[in-house]
Length: 85
Image (cartoon, rainbow, N blue to C red):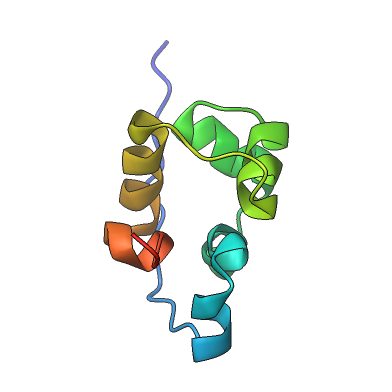
C-alpha cells in the first residue's frame, strides 16, 4: 500500500517588524500560520517534535538538509526564515 502524500496549501505569512527582529520565533509563526503542530512539522521534515521545539526556542539550529525541507514546507526564501543571514 502506498501512502498518499497530502500537499498543504501554504498561505503567505506577513510578519511584523517586531517578529522579524526576534528570529527565534519565526519558525513558530510560520508553523502556526498553516495550522501544524510541532509533531506534524517534524514528520514533514524528518525530525521529532522536541527538535522542532528546540529550533523554535533557538537552542538548536537546523541542519542544512532540514532547513531546505522547512523552506519547501513553508514555500519561503532562506532570508524569510533566518533574517539575520
